[in-house]
Length: 127
Image (cartoon, rainbow, N blue to C red; front, side, top):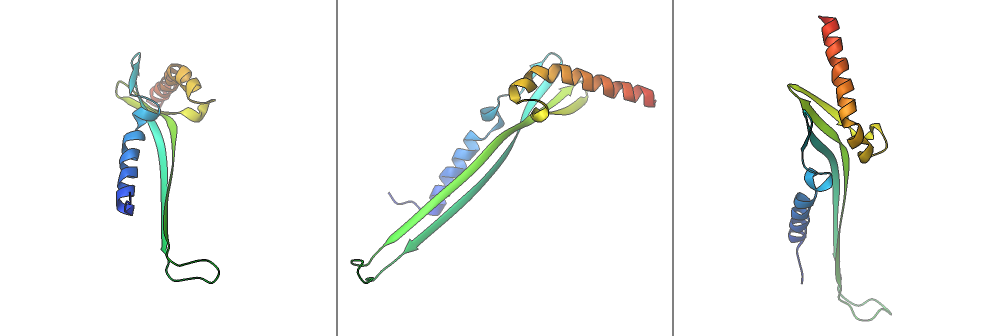
């Protein structure tokens, strides 16, 4: 089955659209007490394509003809953190604050509470 570059690229693009969603990588938005948390990811990708043809005879190589093509793609997906809301306040909590995603999940409530308390204290002091 011979496919054109456009067909292959279309299939790869469709695959990436379906598989590289935040929900696929680290899950759906969720609520944690009064906090609403939305996971955020970073994604990068690259594509390459090459082809060649040939004809005629090369000395000591047999009879001519030829053809060839190749396609390559690569991608990386990384959890970055969470957008977190509480009332009318919104914050970003990065996952790299500790040793990975599981530690971030465990610390989200405490980190948010400390961050928002400090922010509120500074606002009160400023007024």
